[in-house]
Image (cartoon, rainbow, N blue to C red; front, side, top):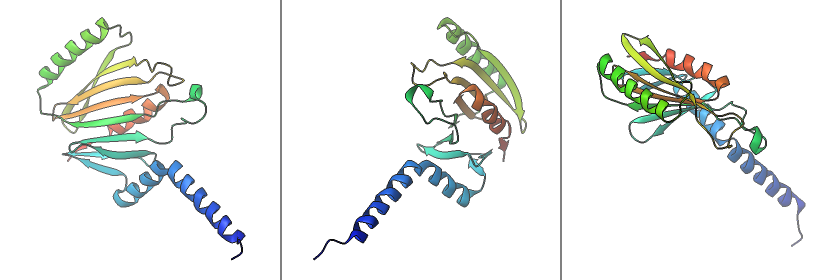
Length: 183
């Protein structure tokens, strides 16, 4: 039996397709998710917007992780930027005073550990008050070109949110969080 170059070409094409599909698997999974669910995630009693450039993934039984997939993180090690991510936890309902007291202790702890740019903000989400604390950069140990900024938010209705990302990505992350609505 003679060697047929068509089989070699077919093998090369299959290998290329496998490499490309593996390289872009998260983008492919995100596209499939958006085709099935649209642009809204139901998390507990909350409607969470999921723009096309974000990928949601269940983390455990009660948590959701949203990751921005269009952050330019390619290139050499020194040129990478952190992807923005939002982690949604199923917390318990708390009074605003309890959350405020918790965040006061958390702020004191962070400042004691050397946190420099710690700020707080509050906003309304469908009748619930959301308290947020953060703004300080996390040292990536040189893993990224820029160090990511971290925020922790808690809603009186029980939603617990952790945001992390570069300053450039945080605007869209905050826009997403600000448009979360109670069912």
